[in-house]
Length: 121
Image (cartoon, rainbow, N blue to C red; front, side, top):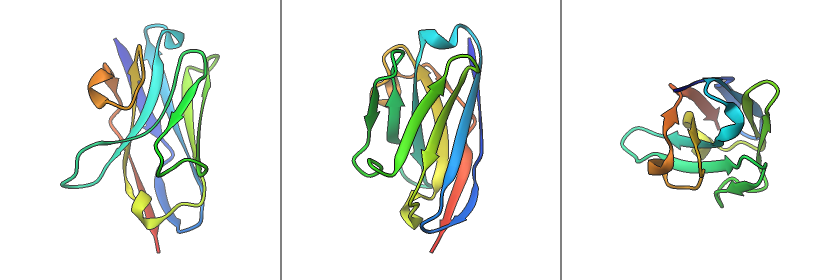
């Protein structure tokens, strides 16, 4: 089992920045790739970004150049730096763990509870 806990969400004005954190506990963190997804009411969960066990990254087109994912294996934590935020980035953000972290949410075995990000215009 892997337990994931997100933090860092909040309210920010358009153009601002936030850093989300996802702390992992349980099985070996380095055995998993990590992903961030987001969801708004009435819509399917949307892939944002993923980072592999080796540190390779894969970004959704909508966030490329604005968001940066990183991981600190010593702290069992993955981060999402979000810059130049837009109102359309408003969503609940979830982190997730998978052996092979691609863009399909079905590939992820463990999920956090989510953290709300609200971007005001």
